[in-house]
Image 1 (cartoon, helix red, strand yellow):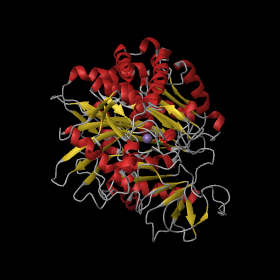
Image 2 (cartoon, protein in one colour; image 1 turned 180 degrees about the vertical axis):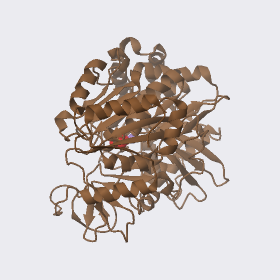
Image 3 (cartoon, rainbow, N blue to C red; image 1 turned 120 degrees about the vertical axis):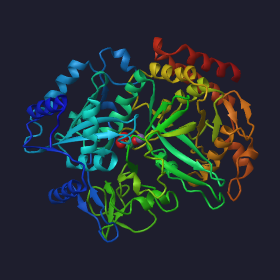
Image 4 (cartoon, rainbow, N blue to C red; image 1 turned 60 degrees about the horizontal axis):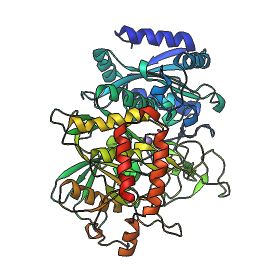
Length: 580
Ligand code: SAT
Ligand code: MN
C-alpha cells in the first residue's frame, strides 16, 4: 500500500530517512491485520494471552513500570510566539523543538518496523471529522489505534480527498524517562512524541490530535474540541436529551457515559455517544451539535464492577487489551474492586503478596471498541452528530462546590467552566489529590493560550441564541469525617434529571451569587439513603469559602494578562460583588 497524495508519500520517505526502520508497513485497518499484529506481539512478549475461555480475544500488556501515565511536564506546545501557547502550556521555540526531536528520532527505528497509520477522527462520512497519519514503531500503538479510531484504507481515501492531515510521529525510543517529549506544532498540524508507549503520550489521535491540535484548529474554524463525554438521557416517555460533560481525567467520565439507571428510576435509560472527547459545531440553525471523534474507550480499569459500571464491565469481557492490570491463578485479568477473583501476579509481573500496594496499577487501562458497549447509542456514528441541550462542567472537590448548580447565562457559564478546579489523579505523573485549576478540564489539553480559548468560548453567544445551558456538578463532596456525601455512579442520574428539567423549563431554581441551585424538593431522593439534611449539606454554598475561591480564581486569571477577555473579568466581578 502507498498513496497518491504526494505530501504524504514525501513525509513518510523523510521520516524513514531520519529513523532508519528495517521495514515500512502501511496499515490497511483490516481485522486480519489486527490479528497478525496480535500474534506477533504474543510471540515477542509485548502481549500476554489472558484466559481465552473466560476472556476471549483479551490480552495483557505490561508497560515499562516508569511509563504508566501522561507526562504533562514534558508536553510542549510550540507556537512561533510563546504568548500564543500561553502560561497554561510548556513552550519551546519551534526550531529548537524540531532540532531536539530530530536528535531523538535519528536512527531510532533501526531493527524495527515503521507503521504508517492513516486514521480518521469522527465518522468517516462526517463533515466534522478530521484525519491524521501516525507513524510509529510500536505494534501496541497500532493495535490500540485500531480499537480507538478508524484506521486504514477508508481513512486514507478520505485523506486523499481532503488533501490535508495531521502529521504525528511517534517512537517508543528507549523509554528513558529523561528523554521523553510530547511536542505539538499546532501551526504546522504536527505532533512528535518520543520515549513513551503510554496512551495519551503515544496514541496520537487522542489527546495530541483530538484535543491539543484540534482545539487550536477549532478556534480558527469556529468550533469547539473539548474534553467531554457525550450521553443521551432517555426519559420514560422516550424523549432523549443530549449532554456534553467535561471532567478531568480519571474523575468518572467513562462511568457517567455508561450510567445505568438504578431500580428506583424506572424507565430511564442512558445511551453512550462518547466517554472522553467531544467536537462541537454550530449548525445552520444555531444548534450546537456534537460528534465523538473516537471509536473506542481507553478507560481506567480499577473500580469497574457490575455495581459501579455494568456496561463497562460487560464491554470488557472480550476483545479487549488490558494494560497494567494484575492476573489471577486462572489467568483472568484482575483489578482493585473487581468484585470477584484473587490476584496472584501484580501489574509488573511479580507474585502478588498484598504488601506492596495495589495489584493493578491505579491508572491501569482497558482499550476496547465502542460498539461493544451495550448502551452504545444508535446516533453515535451519525455524521451530523447530536444536538446538545446542556454542557456540564465538574471536578473532584471535597468541599466548596455544591452537588449541582446552573450558570445564569452563557457568559457566566464560561466563567463557571474557566473556574473548574480538581484534585489530581493517577492519570498523570506527579502527586495525587492536590487541588489545581483545570478550566473546562482542559488544563493538560488546551493547545493554545487559555485567555484566547475563553474568548473563543464567549464568542459563541454572539453567533447563536440557542446555545445549551451550562451547569457545574461535584459528585465528590465529603463530610467533616471525609465520607462522600453523595453515592455517585448510577444515582448521578437524579442530578442529570434536574439538569434536563431546567433545560425543558419544568422546574424553578434558587438564585444564589454563584448560580441557580436546585430546590431540594426537585432532586428525587426516592429509594436513596440520603437524608434531607445531607442534601442540604450537598447544596450548601458557604459565602466565606466562595469569597476565598473567587479571590484565588481572580489571581489565577491575572496570569493571563492582556489575553484575558474583559468579559470574563466582568463576569468574575459580578459574582464577587454578589457575594459581598
Ligand atoms: O492518557 S489518556 O490521555 O489517554 C487518558 C486520560 O488521561 O484522560
Ligand atoms: Mn481524558
